[in-house]
Image (cartoon, rainbow, N blue to C red):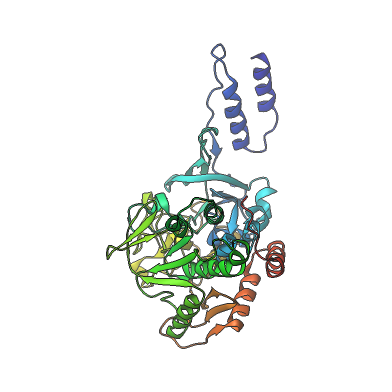
Amino acid sequence: MFWCRNFIKISTATKAKSPITTNLILTSLSHFSTANQPPVAAQPSGLGPTKADEKPRVVVLGSGWAGSRLMKGLDPKLYDIVCVSPRNHMVFTPLLASTCVGTLEFRSVAEPISRIQPSISSAPGSYFFLANCTAVNTENHEVHCETVTEGDQTLEAWKFKISYDKLVIASGAQASTFGIHGVKEHAVFLREVHHAQAIRRKLLLNLMLSDVPGISEEEKRRLLHCVVVGGGPTGVEFSGELSDFIRSDVHQRYTHVKDYIHVTLIEANDILSSFDDRLRHYAIKQLTKSGVRLVRGTVKDVRPENVILSDGSEVPYGLLVWSTGVGPSPFVNSLGLPKSPGGRIGIDEWLRVPTAQDVFSIGDCSGFLESTGKPVLPALAQVAERQGKYLADLLNKIGKEGGGHANRAKALDFGDPFEYKHLGSMATVGRFKALVDLRQSKEAKGVSLAGIFSWFIWRSAYLTRVVSWRNRFYVVINWLTTSVFGRDISRL
């Protein structure tokens, strides 16, 4: 292995762009060692503490709405920005349901982190690491990470540490299963692009399998029965998109099985419970008119081919989509930080974790502590986005006042605390119909609209919220293509 030793010497002699790059090269080359050649000595890996003459480092855990808005607003002249996330993009979740049935393509709702904050891919001290954070050491100001690997035939995960001056935990939440048996094994969630891809592939597979000769009538009906659990905005919008897909595309392109495919929406209480009562009744009417069967009940058990409700009735399914809200992730539960009601990371009025210096938390993984007197905010995109914007402005202010490095912001005045004002809620129910509720709360008075005009407001509002002009262009083109040529039903 003479060539390997020389190559290592050249690599280490050359000025490395970063300590983590050098360590990854050494670790990769160690795989070529033989029994006659001792392996390369293990090197300490990671990003060490910043020096006084260097820019302070902000480490962001997560690339969702909160983390992405934070990174977009941070000033790269003040900070080195390091993002640690298992995905290298932000998902525009309000339009995710449209990708499941081909109304939009998947890339239209995915925005690369390098476009949201260009310094991550260009500045010397800023990085994006495709990894999961496994632990946080608040005393030493460092996070422990492990790279993401997929499948059994990939390289072993690398473990490394990153020192931070300011840490922002924006790791989001996970879908709530309420401990119901079989949900994780048999249901598909709708929170990530890969979830939408799985739903689309399963839906099209069932359509094609149901047309095979010899399939019984009962099996056809099961394969083509799409069951959605959860009557919140995500579940209602997906049911509406699915009913549109059935009426506009399946009835034309799968005429042999068009009478077998159905959609059932299961909700334990009222659908769209946060909306005005008049809007909820309108949604029920439109969904029923579109062929969606509404079932009021609680899921007790999930089996490979049917759902068992609390009254003992069975609901067979070919596709099961689970959309019943979110809860704390195992990572959040593992952190030794104070918790708010509901198990989220507890924060104060300035989005700080009170017991840990230089640690902040935003988005679905955080909630106000009871001592603040504020309620825990709902897990909504607009909450996460507003928190990300506020914290970016706050950290920029701290950096300009010389408090960017670790333990330097104790005596600074943080200014006005975070205040959230609800801007309203929107949801589409299919067939060019939508709901727009502009009230600040369920009890407050305000404007509430339903119908085709609301559908135009819904589309216009979300189009303006898409992060980049690139993706806005994709969305508009997809909408035009679908309206002219129909949805893409290719199973890729």
